[in-house]
Amino acid sequence: MEVKTTTEKTVKKGTVIFWIIAAFILLLHVIAWNSSAFCDWYIAYVFPIWVNTYGRLTGLFPFSVGELLILAGLALAASALFLLPFWAVAEIMAAVHSGRTEKTHTEKKSRTAGRFRKFARGFYRFFVWTLLAVSLIMTLNCFLLYHAGTFAEHYLAGGDGAAVPELEASLEELVRVYNMVAQNCLILSEEVERDENGRAVYKGSIGADGERLDMADKARQLMAQLGKTYEQLDGYYPRPKSLLFSDFMCQQYMCGYYFPFSMEANYNDVMFVLNLPATMCHELAHLRGFIYEDEANFIAYLACVQSDDVFFQYAGFLSVLPYLYNNLYEAQRTAPEAYARVVEAARPVALTKQVWADAVFVTDEEWERINEKAWIDTETVDKAADAFINTNLKANGISDGDVSYSRVVDLMLAYYRMTAD
Image (cartoon, rainbow, N blue to C red):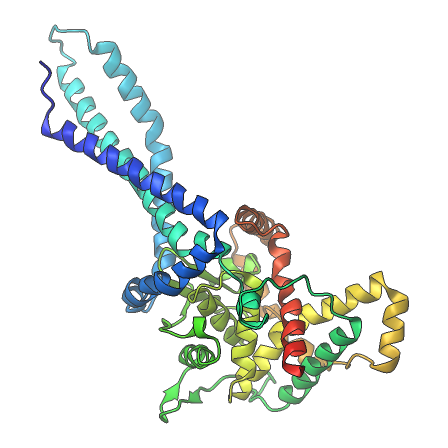
């Protein structure tokens, strides 16, 4: 009778547990794709647990834990690819020699090969368990969120969860909202503090208790304040963190990242300073379960423009200005006659060079520095990043991929239509 060793029993038990967890992940995906009510319940009662526990833990570190985890993951994947052919050869050689019983001068080498095979098996066992853990964390902290009710359904449709139809806003409404944003940009551009070169600077803010707040803590305060109006935004917010590889982020034309596997809001600290407030609030919005980019853009806009801080107000209006401007340009291109009739009655506000200079993503000086030291051409990085983002968004049911970022305009028009009523 065959007697199984303790190691074999442990491996078999681990295999059973592995497939149970894998089945659980699959079940969550099936339920999520078929029940937004389940996802809403999950965001309301379970998702905050991860923010309040794991998010608080990673928040103790002054650096981005998620960024280090990505580096560790890449190193692990590279090691797995490197070891694979050696392991395959070792297993083949072991199979070839398994029937031999005579001792040879290669016995010592065989023992060494055996130890390597044991190590490799343990390594790849760890590797597949790591992949399973990543799949579980990404499912719980990211993928489920894509199938929940949207901000518009919860708060721009009477709060009853009814679906919001595709917005068919008139061109007049678009011009009206654009002019409101543009006019505020003109006014606030004259009010923000600037250095000797004319560039906007942020010197901090005063909190409700009179404490001095830097930009990250101000963003946390504003998001908590917005939670008084929108219940899902209420709760704990960890401190946003800058990324070590912000230069690489610039090459991707990315302002920030929400890392589901570390529950962190991360931002690119190389981009122009007026991008920072809305980016911080945007990434923090993801930590309250709003995973769609257009919604995070809109929430960040509301948090900033409702602030008592001029710098944040200006940054908030600037964050949506390009989207509105591009929509107007598209309307002029596709419906020139209708556009001409509308602007005859309400001409779009002309912006100053200062406003457009403040709306820059990265300054020319920074671009020059980034491109000089870059290992990979920026255009190549940008295309690869776009492909990855589009694939990820479409895999989660967002058919228009990164174009969805610009749907913030629809949310703004719906919001101002509702508040006007």
